[in-house]
Image 1 (cartoon, one colour):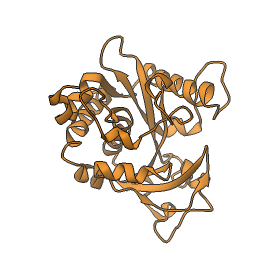
Image 2 (cartoon, one colour):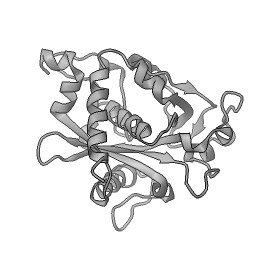
Image 3 (spheres, helix red, strand yellow):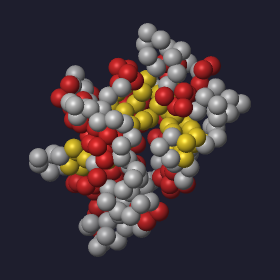
Amino acid sequence: MSLFDRFNLGAGFKKYFQIEAASDERVREDVYRVRHEVYCEELKFEPERPDRRETDLYDLHSVHCLLRTASPPHLPVGCTRLVLAAPEALDAPLPFETTCAHTLDRSIIDPAKMDRRRIAEVSRLAVRSAYRRRRGEKHVAVAINEDDYNSTDEQPRFPYIPIGLYLGAVALAVRNDVDTLFVLTEPRLASHFSKLGVELTQIGGPVDHRGIRVPSMMNVQSIIKGLRFMVKPIWRAVEEQINATASQR
C-alpha cells in the first residue's frame, strides 16, 4: 500500500474495488449467486438450491449492491441488501423485527410506530471466502477485526470490503429516502464502527441467530456527518459509484 493510498482511503478503495447498485437483473443474479456460495454452500445457513441462487421473499422489496474487483474481469467480492418496507404492506415486519420480537426494547425505539417508508434493514452481507481468509473469518459471512485498523506498508489491513459494503447500504438508503437503518450484528461491531465515527445504538437484547446477535440502529445522516476525516473519501467514492450505477436503470 503506497503512502498516498494510506492517507487517501478513497483512492485505495478505487484502486482495488468498485461497487455498484444492482439496478438490473444481471447484477442481481450475481448478488444471489454470491449469497448462495456464502450462505448455502459454505456456511450452511440456508439449504442449497438447484439454481445456486439464494433468494427470499424480502428480495421483492429490497435494493442491493455488489462489490467487485476493480481490475478485469471485475470478479464479484461481496454484496449486501437494504430491505425496505413492502409498499403494499407497510406494517409487515422487517426481518429483524421477527427475529428479535421478544428482545426489542421498545422504550428506546418502536419500529412499528415509525414512518415505515423511512426505515430499512441492512441484511445479507456476504463476502466470498477468497476475500476473508484471515483468522476468525472462516465461519462468518463478513468480518471486521481489531487489526484491520493497524495498516503498514507491507501489510495493508484497512477493512475496505466490509466498510465498502456498509457504506454502499448507506448510499442506497439516501437514494431511497431512508432515515433510520436497523441491523442485526455481532455485539462487538459497535466498537469497530466507533473507530469510523459511526454511532451504533443497541435497541434490544441478544438473540441466537447464526451466532449471538444484537439488534441496533443507525441514523443515516448522522453516519454521513460523523464519519472520520480519513474515512470520508471512501464514502465519496462509494456514493459516486452507487449513484452512477443506480442511474443506469
